[in-house]
Length: 250
Image (cartoon, rainbow, N blue to C red; front, side, top):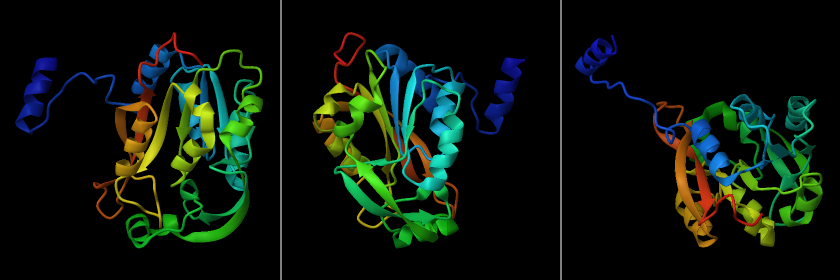
């Protein structure tokens, strides 16, 4: 039967094959978490906890520490993490400094950003980047809050997942010396910037993190241009520290 299906698909230009473990983000993460013995995910820009819920769905039972500064999103995040003793949540953003800032609240709640949308962003994502308001949020440096956030985790092996709509590199800068404790990470990078003065493009982010000792293990589509549904705008970039392994220092 499998042979028949393959032949039928071949006639229409398609091919049936086994999915590789590096082709889907979920399977890729499970492999990395296993190889590096990751037991603590820092979910930065957690929105309403979708990433944490997905980790639980695919079988990850370690610690998740989530950060989300926007009030409406934080309420959803708190609900998602409720009843999970290994999933604390914090109502502030991570960045390169301690302080406060005004964040743009958009119609598409996953796009809230400290940056204003550019012309391409408005054209390609439509109403999702329509500004509905501005909210004052708190920003903290990771190196100043990490120890308190990791309280109760005896030997944390860290995997930051960053989705801050243009501020991921600021999160990295705010990690300071604590970045040395990170074994692998995930950052959202843009092929085409959708915000003004956006630094977190693929060509900027990857070289900077490579200089800090990380290498790319996978790139996974996140957002496509709504005008055709094909052209990629954003990717999740997964990277590991060079020679990181279960025996590496946490």
